[in-house]
Each structure stands twice: as structure tokens, then as C-alpha cells.
Length: 128
Image 1 (cartoon, rainbow, N blue to C red):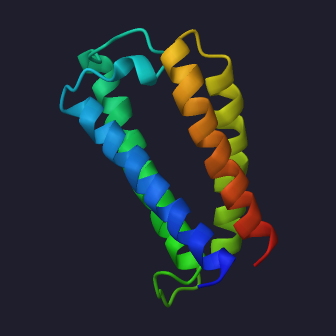
Image 2 (image 1 turned 90 degrees about the vertical axis):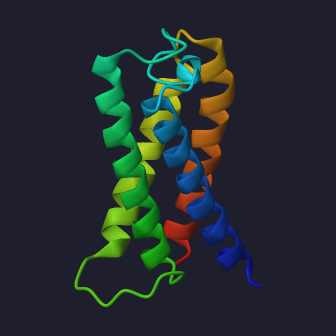
């Protein structure tokens, strides 16, 4: 298996894992210190909606990279390269935002995670 394919699988799995994490927040798991500034162990109702939207967006991102890298065969006129590039740009901003989180748990867990996701997505975007 080529390095490109391995990285593509890792990216898709990481998007799924982070989407699952957001779903766990929505159903009330006490993981809030790792997300959205880390101010709550269990997210209040006003933030549950945001986590739900985050989960959906992450699943779309997962689908974009699966289609872009050829892991998921989609016949569409969608410009997956442009979408993957935008997602990669978002990930660098997300990494910077996590770096400045007041929550140590968010800073020390989510910053490296989003940073790795950014680097892997950047590799896929640049070498396709």
C-alpha cells in the first residue's frame, strides 16, 4: 500500500473519531473540557447544538477527503481538490485556535490532533 493511501485512510479515520467525539458531547458524556474552550465537563444545552453541527461538518469533511483521495468512488462535478484545500486551511486555523485555548486538556490533546490532521491533509492536497 502506498504512503498516500495510508495517509488517506488515517485522515478519514481521524475525521470519524473527532465526529464521534462531538457526538459523545451531544449525548452528555463528560468530555467538555476537551472542546469549545473547555469551560464545562458536560456541555450546556446551548453548546450541544454547536457540537451536533460540528459532528455533521466533520462527517462532510471525512466524505470530501474519502472522495478526493479515491477511497470513496463518487461520480460528481464537485471540485474535491478545492474543498480539500479549504478544509486544510480550516485545520491550520483550528490548530492555532486550540493552541490558545484556556483549557489545558483541549490545548494538549486537540492541538496536536488537529495539527497532525492539518499536516496529513496538506500532504494529500499537495501531492495529488
